[in-house]
Amino acid sequence: MNFLIRDAVKDDLESIARFQENMAWETEKLKLDANKIRAGIAAVFEDASKGRYFIAEFDGEAAGSLLITYEWSDWRNSWVYWIQSVYVEAAFRRKGIYRALYQHVQDLVSKQNDVAGIRLYVERTNETAQKTYTNLGMDGQHYQLFEWMKS
Image (cartoon, rainbow, N blue to C red; front, side, top):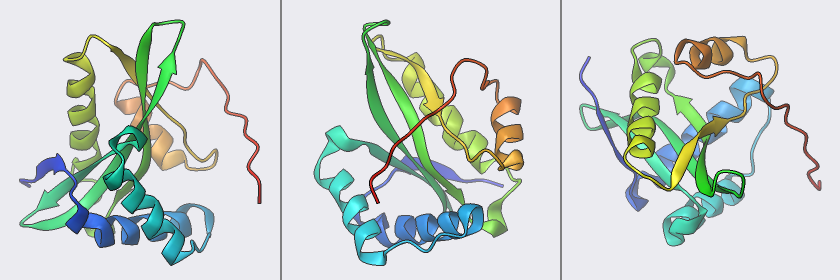
């Protein structure tokens, strides 16, 4: 299967929004507010400091995407890229699309002296995703995520 990994553009907003709505439902049975998710995606396109989307495209069709956001690490005096909002359309799963997206981000990190590495978080019960990340050489041994989110 041949596919292209590319930077997302504003015209990809609807595909990315659909991916995020599907992901939230599939992984957590959450229904996202359609207007809020679209505004959130648009905010990334309007302000590159918020992040950067990548699209996996097959025959001109968006098959998957991910977002990287940025964390400053004073310990490393470098940035850390956080992978977020990962989604691959069901018809394209198990074909190496996430692997290619991840490899694309890993290649970006490898070429930049001011980026130390990649992190992501995963739903505790999403064993399929955890296995994928482990198979790509990532581990979840160092930190446990805690959060507080206002309602």
